Amino acid sequence: ATPAATMVGTTIGAQHGVLFKGGDVLERAKDVDTVVFDKTGTLTEGEMELTDVVAFGDDGGTLPDGGTVAERGDSAADEGSAVGDGAEARGDEVLRLAASAERGSEHPLARAIVEGAESRGLDLSDPEEFENVPGHGVRATVDGDEVLVGNRKLLRDAGVDAAAAAETMERLEREGKTAMLVARVPAGADEGELLGVVADADTVKPSAERAVGQLRERGVDVMMITGDNERTARAVAEQVGIDPDNVRAGVLPEDKSDAVEAIQADGRRAMMVGDGVNDAPALAVAYVGTAIGSGTDVAIEAADVTLMRDDPLDVVKAIRVSDATLQKIK
Ligand code: ADP
Ligand code: MG
Image 1 (cartoon, helix red, strand yellow):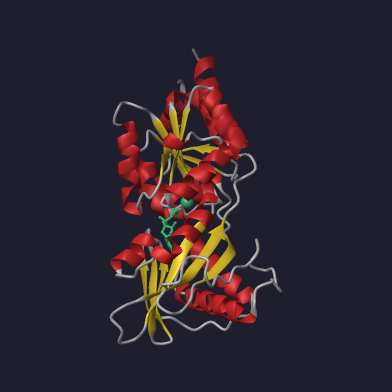
Image 2 (cartoon, rainbow, N blue to C red; image 1 turned 180 degrees about the vertical axis):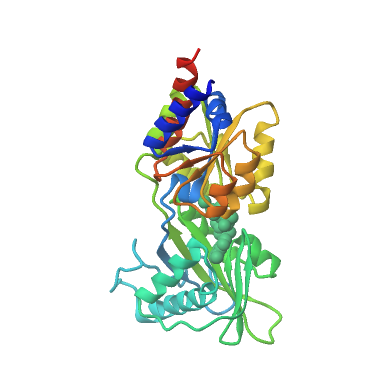
């Protein structure tokens, strides 16, 4: 494109909140044939809310799933559920321990757990020896015991049997929620015990489905990549119209860029759209890296395009502006 056309395209983009980092990317965007969306914070609002707390019996987790379940309704803020006092107290203790451990984490999943516990008036402890296990969860010492909150792998690595939670986990995940196991390894004990499950839910952005639809109409393949588990990821993909086969789930933060490279290995030109620190390397290797404006500075720095509004439809706009700019100057 001529410098004048580039300037016009860049200006039109900016008027729509689509910031191109230079003329090259403005030219490249029209050739994108695959858009890879990060899930959390990109297709979804990224504002997690605690939705469920389930406590298992405290006799080693051997009770069948659902045996002594203290379960809350749809919203953690719901008070006065129909659950008995004993079960409710156990649920509160699971949540209190989980939230105390998560106090050390900045992760949206962690913040939702802490906020959910605080809104219930639970008295949290300060975690000691907090450890963040990226892509898996947290481990922290709470009231002298080690507490684990995270996915199946986190517990497996700690040698805690989570079989009793399998059904509960699957049910919550099918609802599109992120379910996390809570376990405790008492001081001095060599075996940990499963305490329960907590779940957070996120809402899909209102325009996500339309954005996916418009991209597909243009013949652009739409994919999703997430560190979240397969079942939750597929439930969200279904809500926005992404083919389940196009979901890459359980991708560790450090593996996101490899996943994008794998997608591009057969010559595809992928636009990666993300918001998090996690996404920066993937944005950098993509044919076009696009950051959501409300995302982290690291993501914005690594990206070629920044969408100032949090609207997935602006992904379509970015491609259209590129298209229009280059057609006009021909
Ligand atoms: P995403 O790509 O969706 O941002 P992450 O890669 O950060 O997800 O995390 C992947 C999974 O690891 C989460 O779905 C969750 O099961 C677990 N996890 C990560 N951080 C935490 C945390 N602070 N507390 C509990 N679980 C966590
Ligand atoms: Mg994200």
